[in-house]
Image 1 (tube, rainbow, N blue to C red):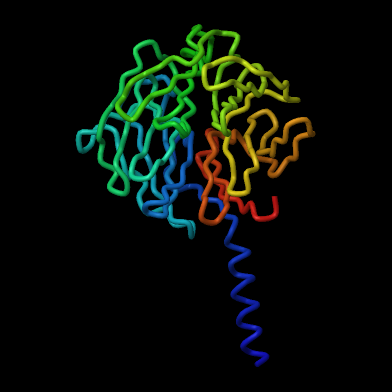
Image 2: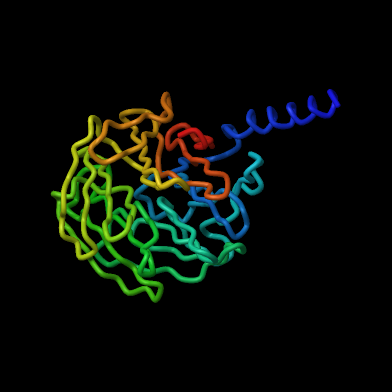
Length: 289
């Protein structure tokens, strides 16, 4: 009986140790975003592989197992198999579709196969960045409004793109503060900004409801975990924090270089964090958050 209980204890301990892990030195190249694909139970990593502004068709998407194994460095690759992929940034997996922001296009791939289905050109876009589920169908996409050197280009915007590729401009203007991560919660949209360090709240018609100034800027990813907690990452704060309206931020993870666009493993309640400059990824357990 003692041996049986010892085995159970060691098994549980082993799971706890491996719930958090880091993958580095495997070939990631400017990983900007991570996303969980429930269809094939895998983590996807968007690699810019060069300039975030470059239309060089050398971007790629990696595939990682939940156990921390790199299964395919270039699972989807620009310039191969008819794929055009320049500088992939934000991603969202919706059932059997993967939507990827790519400068001025939204790329749509099949899941679990990873086949390019369509490329939707957003005519006035310059730096499409955050992507998230629109509960009425389709996706929300932000344009960070920056050009080479991360200087403003006046194209700050939030778009809705339907499943059929119809593009609607929800709101636009430099006063948006360089949009990045975006998240729909009920009948509201939350959006975090890079330069102004704010959380904006909009209704679904694009009306600004309120804005909250944060203690730091360079805010990037914005997600909701399986418990309904809102989490965003910040390069300036070097970590990920839990947001609650009207309450101080709760820092969950710290000491991270350039934590970029976040993902959530909805099966295991884990936070997926790419290091844009560090060419590595972190997977963090959220069970105690």
